[in-house]
Image 1: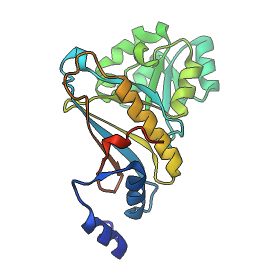
Image 2: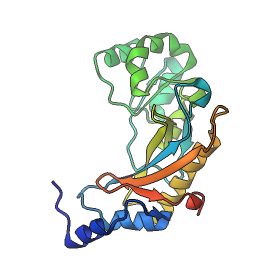
Image 3: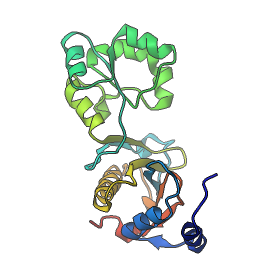
Length: 232
């Protein structure tokens, strides 16, 4: 168990579970309560007024975080020939075809993003039951099925994150590390929330964005003042 300092204990005891924080105060509070020796990830969770069981209320997409994620993204690419060479040159961690498929079927799935050229979908399709549940199945709507593997790899490595609403109507994602500056985290926060707002589905009824919470790997969940959503 992580031992808190007297200052951290005092701050934790004073936390009001119902308080609404401005993003600046929330980030400062997470920094004050930092107890882990590693560089904690800052995460944002949004509660949405949608029921993803209905196709017209699904919220899913990609967003590029301007300050990056602070995470070394591992990318696998299904490609052959020139596209395979381009993928390797662009920094893909693993490139292949049937051999990569067999590798994944054997349980080697330590990747954060899987990309495929269109001609490889016949091979990738055999991995649907493996990649689908992990959210790794290449999808043309998300730009992970594309002939431009170089750009897709650059986006993945450069801070692009995928978001998808869960059954309870919640979307969450890491937006950086506590070591990031406030400006960097706020830029990522605003980009992420803005992408979710713009992705509002046609079938959403009533209030769409219901609650925003920000936390760190070992920190408390802090409720964000909704009027502060788009502050710089």
